[in-house]
Length: 212
View 1 (cartoon, rainbow, N blue to C red):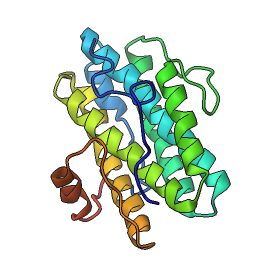
View 2 (view 1 turned 180 degrees about the vertical axis):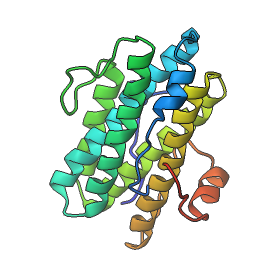
View 3 (view 1 turned 60 degrees about the vertical axis):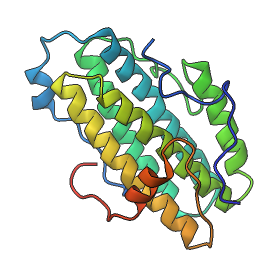
View 4 (view 1 turned 90 degrees about the horizontal axis):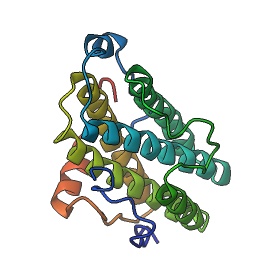
């Protein structure tokens, strides 16, 4: 109970896949995007945007589905936040003329088959119990945090950096929310991607305010 999902190379989205909370939502500033509209994105930046479009959709889709299973408001609240997160990334896709990998895809449908497999695996675990559903939430935010931190090291375009930093703040807040719910039930989450020290540094600090 409360353990992170057991993953395999086939179902874990690696933090290097593409370079080859609170419930407040990330809102991409149109002014920031407009300032850099004429600039060209590197291939790495394009890959980073497309990856995060589906990774944020994964979070949204899992939380929507778990909200239908379990009568706990955290899933509905954070799903609403994830809607705006993925729409913020979609704004970047539109601005820079990229092909949207999430276009026309329903809940649980992804262009990248790894995300489809991970969605199925997380829903299977989250359906076992409320504690497992909360552990799934912590796992997703764990993954998001590590991926965003890695991607922020290779993106230079200000509009992309601004969006990713807001998503990262949101993921830290969501991690705090899920782990708090687990702890209130006498359970703990063991990080799969963050180091233990990184994880404890996040959950031991207060919810971050502002756009997230």
